[in-house]
Amino acid sequence: MTNAKTPSTDPGTAAAENVAGPANHSLLKKGGPDDLLLLAYKKVEKKLDGALKVYLSNVIDCDLEVEVGDSTKLSFSDWLSGLETESVYLEFHLGASKSPILVRVARTYLTASVDCFFGGQFDGGTQSIGELKKSEIAMIDRLAGAIANGLTDAWSTLFATTVRYNCCIYDKGDIELDLEDENVLVSATSVQLSGHQIAAIDIIQTIDGLIAIEPQLNRPHLRDVNEIDPIWKANLKDSVEQIYLPVRSVLARPTMQLSELSRLAVGDILPVAPTDNVPLIVGDRVFAHGSIGEQSGGVAFKIKNFL
Image (cartoon, rainbow, N blue to C red; front, side):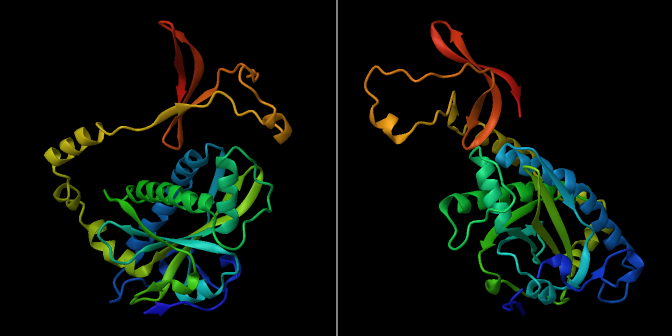
């Protein structure tokens, strides 16, 4: 049982062994060849940059750049004790593997994501402190969904699988991993947002988890054996398509002084600048952009492009 409750440095400064090539490590418990596992994980890492960029950008509707660094091999307790940045920790599961994938999300990146989601700009240094705000807790769920999709896309380069979000751990002292092999691979991931670079995310892949999926890497026929029941899949698709979702558009977001607001009366007119880039919002996500017009005597929304 690994129960990390010691204080912490950024992963980049922690003493660690860099995974430069398969020959430098022994991942398998019984001395078998480990080239397959290391090379396979390298393929996952290469796909993560693009996959995370797409899904994380969609969450906040802002452009950003993602760079996943080469993985570093070190003991889990050493990584955890080396953390100084205030963070939250997301736990994911790959397929049926019992050993989780852990993702550290820096509080700075969480704050920046909330700012950008509500139309602001990250100034490069602002970070919420103390207890998490409601907006930050909601953003954690959005980021978790995006990261789960990114990890699923990356791992699907090797075999058909799904990465599922399990829970969020707010204090690193509450993290407990039951590991046979203490070693993990840590991929430090930076995000450039509003022109500022953030040491935003660490992706922690356990060696136990790699060993657990090794048989699937050696048996490509399992892809066919594990194929989803087509009847069940079709019924699920039909059911999902009947779900109602709230759809809205925002024509303008004017700002007013409190004194002006208090003087408003029935019949007052608020000027709205004409625009052909009105967002169409489904739930809490921008789904498309378009313009407001008229059709059959009523107000209509014309879609220009989908996101």
